[in-house]
Amino acid sequence: MSKYNLVQVGKNCFRYQRTGDMLVDVELYISPELCKKVESGAIKQLIDAATLPGVYKKVVGMPDIHEGFGLPIGGIMASDGEIGVISAGAVGMDINCGVRLLQSPIPVNAVSKRTLEKLVKAIVEQVPVGVGQKNKLGFKSKDFNAILTQGIDYLFKKGLAVATDLEHTEERGYFAGANPDAVSKTARERGFYQLGTLGGGNHFIEIGYIDTIYDQKRADRYGLKKGNITVLIHTGSRAFGHQICTDYSKEMLKEAERLGIRLPSKGLAAVPIHSKCGQRYYQAMAAAINFAFANRQIITHLIREIFADFFGGQHTLTLIYDVAHNIAKFETHFGRKVLVHRKGATRALPAKDPANPSCYQDVGHPAIIPGSMGNPSYVMVGLCGIEETFKSINHGAGRVLSRRAARRQISTDDLKKKIGNVVINTPKFKKILDEAPQAYKDIDQVVMAMEDTGKAKRVARHRPLAVIKGED
Image (cartoon, helix red, strand yellow):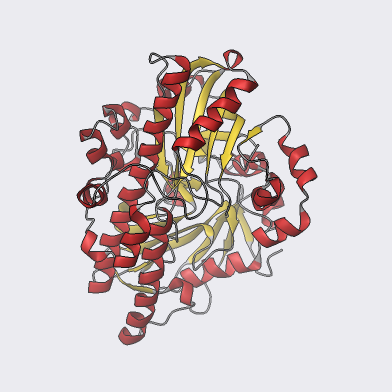
């Protein structure tokens, strides 16, 4: 429970009033029940962010909030686009960790458990999973540089994406401003062999189906059909982004000291956006964003080929949408150009927002909210009023147990019982105890906490049938 005095100021909205060195208030969008369980450390990190130079309007927390490095997971901070700062720790280690949802025309009753087991095996043979795994793609250095600067657009030219993949990806799968020269040799070496790999931790590939539709109009527009097989892919920039965050957090710490910028913590090391260091980090971050979009696209291509082998080429997987979680982007909010840091938060543009892709302009783009292993996931959409959160919603369920605590408190029997009949790629349940559903908040409570604010709503629910996880 937090030791900070949060005052409820609206439906599922709590505020910590500006005090001391804070330049803006902190607002937390969460239910009263979940608010009681928020760690003091996570609130402290929001308060710390509110002291950074140029921080704008408010610092925001989402209902899946938990303590992280610098800014908490589920934290949103906007910096004035001219005089504000940029912080590697406020973006996160896994730059553009994100999730995409694919829909097939295959009905769930046409896929047996045996077929799911074979699908899982085939995917794992093509997509390396777990920490430190290397890809089997045979990309050359020139391909890697092109991906860092062009993102999915380069893969489209190579025949590894279709035209709708670009339109159905945040930023069209390409983030401008990337500069491979701003990336360290170590980061490049760590990232080169990890394109097309899943990784460990909370990353996953999940085969499931749409079991509930809440908003038929939007579900129809998105192409979601009740009872049809779906695929979720959740991964990011892997060791490439991690190294960039590590490199620039150290550099920003030194540069802030040189410039006389008072920092509330090492994790929130920050420099002026338009400083040399700030611009180089932005260029490196952009490269990692493009890497991550491409990573999810390559995995998509491999899974599409597997589905074609299993079900026939006519049973294609259509990308519904791909959203980023850990990212900093220049946007206009409350009439001002700001750099929005979303860490463990998802952009959710409402209908008529000009930044929506044209195909979703009149309904708002889908926001994909993955649940923890074995639990449902949701498709949501932002509504009028979402501006109060810088047009952001939660990115998942959020942890309640650290990885160490989960391994200590949850048994393999507990995990097996919780997962039930869901197919898992590994028989070594002890290796994935840190990702057990019991280590996370209840996804239904978290999603409803956001919906009850009136700023977002559910469109559809995805139920898992099979989950591929890598060992951390």
